[in-house]
Length: 450
Image (cartoon, rainbow, N blue to C red; front, side, top):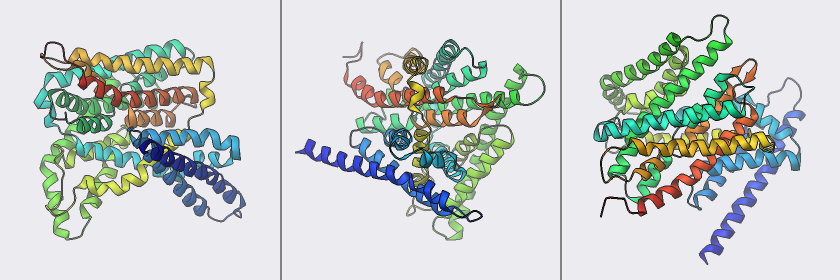
């Protein structure tokens, strides 16, 4: 009975998503029919409604199968981006891919997501498990980066070295949100393994953003006239990123409570949300101003307001800032993921080279993160569980890939359509296998422990 009900539920959602795919072709028709000189806000609103509904339906469907919602949102986007042109013509998908307003809304979703990640990060977790978390994070960054770099250089020899490095950087990301959810479901968040994973995740987030800042800065410098990026310039980018994060966290110790008290003093419900978003957008602007990615500023805003992940609120009766962000996240974050999926052209994986790159990146992504087991110190710890906990790329990997598409090198995107599709395939597989692997790893006996 239950399986029949789930099949019926899944068929209903699948039918709804198919209907929304048909509707996706309509905005381009309306846009083409709009008289010249008139606004096209209506088709944009209609497209936004279709995208949000399709993303949420896909997320609901995949969650009923025990997988993260981001997988469903991404898969629905891939389906719409590749099936709608075949069935109803390419105009609707082209409209979505090229509409700048939708891109801005998607970027807002990314900033809100990184603000929330910063709010949930607990810097004290680093102190609880110390060297194990640090070593796990360092191996989890370096091993996939080097493997991805080498693989890209082997299979994409015609691309510049910076492209090879960027491909490696996308493999270094880790989605802690997915791992944290599985740890909570299994009731092992407070275990030594859970604490090492969560502590390493904070370092991984910070180091991953620093790596992204360095490579983005190198790409920007390559497009400017003058000498190539020197080691001193690279050190300068690293220094700016670490200094920026350090200053914002330090200021948070001084300004976080006054900001919360000021929000409470206004007596206006939701004022903390206004202050939080304003700080997020301001720090994202400052980060871009000093040559860093805007998402670093959004992450820093979260650390500044709540460095220990305790949940800031104006009073005990009010919601936390993270809870206040939830409705905005529900609306804007899925827009980013479904647009990422729509931008994937599966035809680029049909070639032997494209498919080989996708399979190779999956292998590098898995092996590189499983090497994190070597960084676990102490006896009686489930090293395999710690390593698997670092495997999922999820939303973080997609954000890195999205930035790679937006950056240009020599007049071309840093990530070609083939490389982007291969990376999305890697994100899908690693995000899918990690929850299953964690459940298995925590059930198996640990050598040396009775």
